[in-house]
Length: 428
View 1 (cartoon, rainbow, N blue to C red):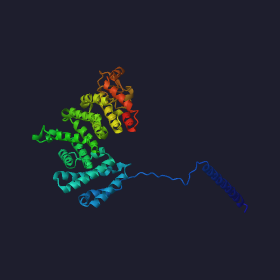
View 2: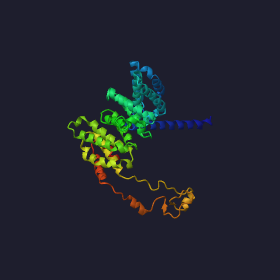
View 3: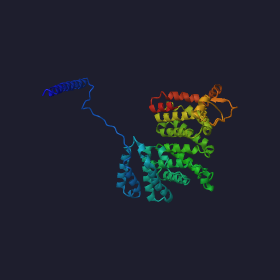
View 4: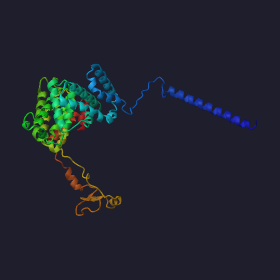
């Protein structure tokens, strides 16, 4: 019993310590709750989560396979289409999850479209329209730049896509905008084939309105001034077509003249409040054109376009989207005037060995391939950079006065009331 006495005493001490610790902890918790720093059990908590994979691949794959069947059942067609919209809307914040499946889906959908282009039957037309509608949903989710990677672009696709666009416009005007939007995107990637378009034109049609290049140009002019979403696709198509090496000398000045004339008429029109789409379409096309081409290609067109565009001064317009595209077009034209300046060390290398590099103090000679046998008679360059006096001479670039006027307009755009205009001006 005497040996157990100390043990019981230790137990009493431990119990006392635990009780005091618990009471102190409770007092601390109650105090923090009274001070407002504790968690309120009645407060709502919002749980955020991220999806790990695309979970509806089987439904979409089955839908694409069943397209020839469901086009004949309007009830089933509407039900599946609405469900597809809801499913894709769930992935608006993580659209990259559908990337592994885009290739097979788009390939199967375009097979139906190309089949209609070959047969032109009414049954295949329904199938093709539904396929283009599904493609439009995928484009809304993932963006047209990603979808363009998977669209077919063979030589024969130029004539097929172009004829489908023309036929759709003749039959329905601009009503079927979803189908026309995707057809214009398809044509914009097909038109980039590395062959002269005259080789795709019938010899009897060369130089006439039935030639491939004239038909593409007319389609662009028709769609770039409408109020539907197809206007954006037409602007992109126009930029890709005009910047082709075989099309730029023939149609570059004509397209710029058409866009500037149409834009000026829309701005000066008394009823211009009803024509904001014309202003936005022309400015979007000009911005896209000067983005797609190189400086050497578009420098002469920029000299024509810049003064006429600056004289319009659309920053005083009431259309925020128009002001946004106006600022965007101006900054891309200004960049065309400025020569490209590549880093002087971009294609210079030091020695392959770190020891040799440290021994020579980073001094490299032109023509040195890294094995130490460079041309010793050339002037040395430290770390691939030219001498300081040569660097100062290269920095003295003559800036055209038109660039200064554009910079003044961009600075005005930074004070615009709408955020989209300020952001666009800030990029310039």
